Length: 426
Ligand code: LLP
Image 1 (cartoon, rainbow, N blue to C red):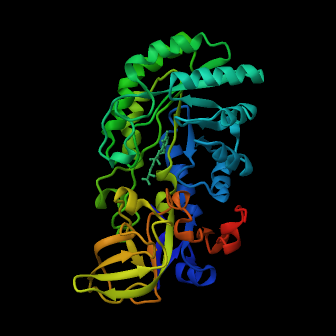
Image 2: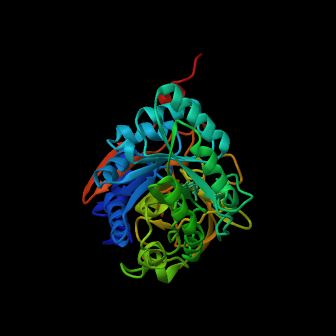
Image 3: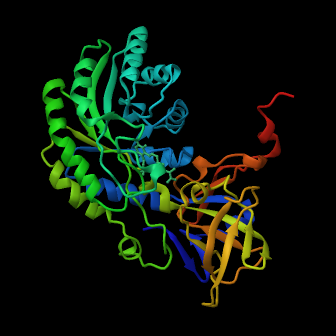
């Protein structure tokens, strides 16, 4: 479900015309719908209402402070992976005591920072990290709350770069070794064993792996609760979203009919019976589900180029603005913000200005007739869009807009050439 619809032939985000936003603020431009973000948050919260639970938004998906503010006001916790993300949460008015700190390579400075603001938990990925946290906590006169991240060795169908729960991935500690590592951790004086965590991957489009991993870990959770009094089980993120046919579908059934993915109710129906009666609080770390379909990247067509074999639509956004197609062969639906009057379709490649052959948004895509100067929307770009953007080719980072009803707020201005070199000496 999302709030991007054609009204009188013009694509709108809620009640704001995207063509108008592109004219007013320029392109490339990220536009987010606050209504969609809140709706997704509330839907998930409601679906889990039977459980003692906490939603910790994985802000690697979208870390704009205004987006974080929106979720913080709603009561969300946060899943962070760096000192920078923690800083953003705090600047957004989020509660650090609702932050889980994940990641395989936390530095001493980051650990000290997180201890100083009393994060909810360090989700620990190795024994050396446990020892480092214990030592830093001792030095600061703190007791560090820790949860081990379990690598459950469960396979999921997703791109290999975003699958994390198999034994060969770098993430977590092997399932078989977990009891022993907790025993060792319990001897470290400056640690408090507060939970257990897992995350099997991202953009998962079927519910069975979630049910499988929870079923596999449940006896472990019960025994850790008994032995060490752990307080939570974090089931990670990973809920997949629909990337195809986002606009063709109606309000209902949009998830189901167009892509092999599941509704939040189906997700809850699959995991709630297993989790019912669990002796600890359940944490969930969604990123993409909350923000993915809540955002688009607007781009203007610069040129149309016909080659002997292909038609290229050359746009003013590149892989530096949205890297998902280049990095994961990610699919993003592309639609003109001015609805096409004709049903006729043409096969084109939509490419950016970056000097790389991998700089494309679509290859061999059927699109209506596209003209130079018009604005296109790359759909479902609210997650892992801006957060993965870079200055490659010395291109300026795009601006970001947050829409609420008819109101469009600029929540990050476009970089300038001065910004681009502002940290360089010379
Ligand atoms: N928790 C942990 C420990 C994670 O590593 C991740 C994502 C999440 C939660 C949130 O996962 P989500 O609910 O968003 O699937 N850049 C890639 C996705 C990378 C995901 C990394 N970890 C993409 O654009 O598809």
